[in-house]
Amino acid sequence: MAALTIREQLDSLLRNGGSVSMATLVAATGSTPKKAGAKMWVDPSGAIAGTVTIGGCVDARVIEAAESLGREGGRARLLDLSLDDAEAWEIGLTCGGSVEVLVEAVGAESAVRSAYEAAAGEIAQSRRVVIAMRLDEPRHRLVLGDAGVIAGSLGSPDLDRDAARAAPAVLDGRVSRVEPIETPGGIRRVFFEYLAPPRLVVIVGAVEVARSLVTFARELGMRTIVLDPRDRLLTTERFPDADELRVGMPSQLVRAIPMSATVSLVLVAHDVKFELPVLREVLRSDVGYIGLLGGRKRREAIRGALAEEGFTEREIARIHAPIGLDIGARSTAEIALAVAAELVSEERGAGRADGAVRRTSGM
Image (spheres, rainbow, N blue to C red):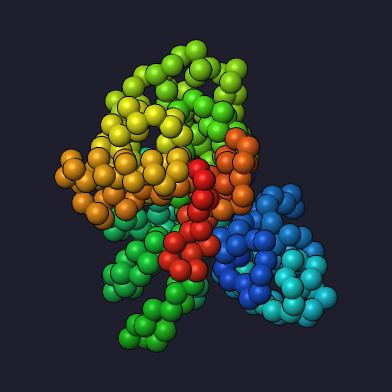
């Protein structure tokens, strides 16, 4: 769940004062559709929002703990719930296992609320963060980003330092997880919650592939900006699902878009006079992904031109071409599906048995 959404949910639940019980899925053995960081809230009236699994026995136990915390107050509780095969199947695990869920009371002035406020501010600037918390002392929160500490503390300068050292690996891994950190007082289990802005897909070329790709991206929770100099093609009628349409020379328009690890650039114009100037602008930027539509012959021609202009092999190797996973795509919609699949694969770090994603052969 995005930090902006969590912050907004907390604001809504806390608008009348008091506190709300928040449950966070910290860890699970087995395979479940809910990932670490999933949230559930129980307000003082007993109303429930969100889920830490997909319903069933675990959520019922979490709700009971949250209601108890709300009635009686007290410290946060870390629930370690063991499941038999029948219970595991009920929540989407293929076999028995266990889940850990932290249940805590959150108030408007709490460190928890402040941490999500700080994280939301970073994400609004297209920056990713992790929020670290000690599972033995979860009332503290430390917000960390690519540049280091942003806000908060874990209650110990030494632990803050060690958590900051562990954060880059979590940011690069792009998943929330528990990391053990050794301290003079023993091993501390620290939960790092990974939060990032929705992936921004910048599409160059208002072609048919782009139309389908925008639709797929929207369904996948990604934001899209389509760039093209041809205003008769770049219309809301043709791209009703796009977040933004920008008419003009793509190489000039991309300069106004902050490039970061959460941005994917997809070149589908199939026109070198648009693509080469854009590549010159972005190859040395922090953009997370660059994909180029076209066959291998065309790819090699573009790479050769860039090499002659002084771009290094490492920089040119950032171009994913031919674009898209190998699904045997033929139609424009199928090509867009292959591209969307590659965007998901890149974000998850999946599909790389030999260090590279299997790509289409004819795009």
